[in-house]
Image: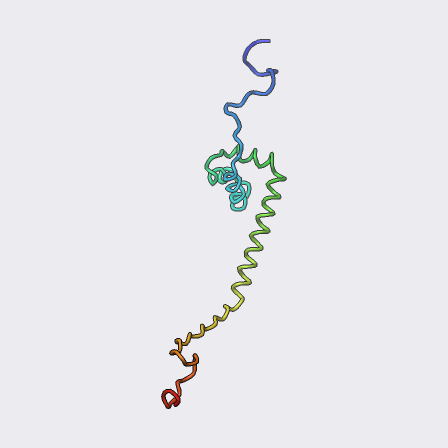
Length: 123
């Protein structure tokens, strides 16, 4: 029973700060950084900017299954987008139709698009 020293305390040592929930922006940065840097926690922490390497590592291993599924989803979406872009590059551009020119309105008493009779008023 004494104070200080190593050994049996009353349970886990309290952390200095309250754990903060990871924001969506941080998670997105984590996914991109994992793709880029693998498990280099210092580089990933630098890319996120708001978490330490230890926080990144702990979050990863605490949520590994969920993160792996998300990364697979992101990879599939990226592959699909790349396939679509490649398909569009191979496809010839669509031919543009020329617009038909509108004919000017015919003078009164004359059918549109027909020349006027040569003899004047036809009498």
